[in-house]
Length: 179
Image 1 (cartoon, rainbow, N blue to C red):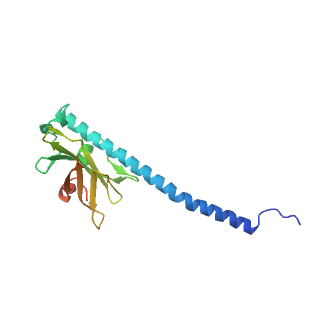
Image 2: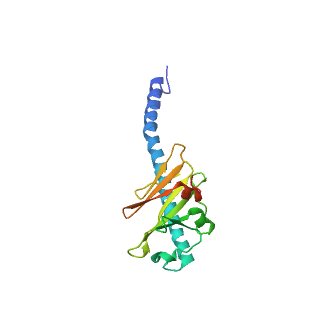
Image 3: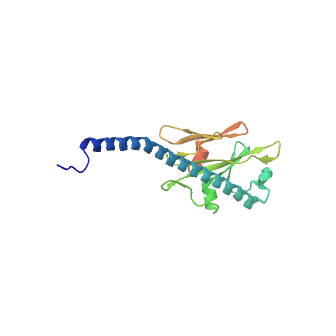
């Protein structure tokens, strides 16, 4: 009798090999996807920071960040007696500098951009940004560290400027829509 086809053992061996390949490949594909998403959020953060710089320049003149009195936009937030100034991301959006910031499948993001005044030079340090997109994404790097409490809300954010740290508390974060 002439048999054509595969035996059950051969088919099971092929299925087992494919299973091993899938077990190895899927976590790496997921890791690549997540890294790509995080990288895209880093780009969004950088674009938002650039937009905040443009908002300041347009509102206050060409050399806005070189003079403490030049952060003059009405939507600014004074922190720690004027040692720091910030802008809610929502004010940058409402002034038309960037579209609404979202994460992955349109989860809305809120945030704050913070600048530190350097009294020695009379200028502001480069801004730092914190974005919070519900309970799915929060900026976290060596210069911006959020504190997350049990219900996935942000209780405070620590910003580091040239080895000096300042904490933005929940009331200021709340005014920027960060929960």
